[in-house]
Structures are given as structure tokens and as C-alpha cells.
Length: 94
Image (cartoon, rainbow, N blue to C red; front, top):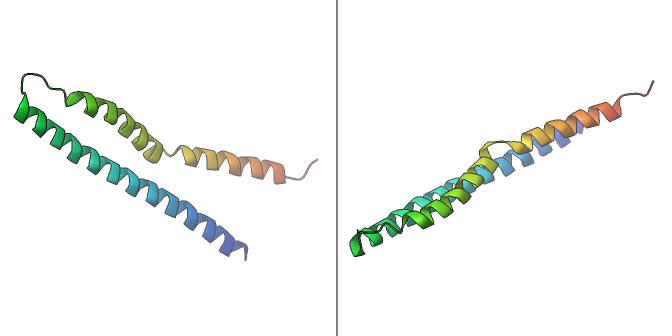
């Protein structure tokens, strides 16, 4: 019974991580397509000022933050800390 609960917990974590990675990949793809479109519009209409770089920069900052939240595994660190605290709390008191 405990093994089933642990397996279900691990599956939920794995699903959440997979969803986060797929979400980031979708975000990255949209960023590339929209940025290419903006660059094309800019270069076809006025090639003397590259205004498309500003939205790319602003959106890029958000994209980097999204990538760090997905791939830096801050959640893993939190999970490890929780497990350590639970282990410590479950130890018999002297």
C-alpha cells in the first residue's frame, strides 16, 4: 500500500515536470515564430531602425525566467528539504 502511494506521488511529480517542459518548449517555439515575423515586418517596412529587437528583448527576459523555473529544478531542492525535515521529525526523541 505504501509503495503504491509512493509510486503515485512520483508519477504526479513526473507528470508535473513533463508538463512544465512541454509548456516551456511551446513558449520557446511561439517566441521564435513571432520574433521572426516581427523581424520580417520590420525589415520589409523600415530597415533603418531595428525596433523588433525591443519586444524580443522584453519577451526574452520572460522566456529565460520561464526556462530557469523549469530546468533549474528549484522544486527538487524544496522536495529534498521537505524529505530531510520529515526524516528528522520522524526520528525518535532521546
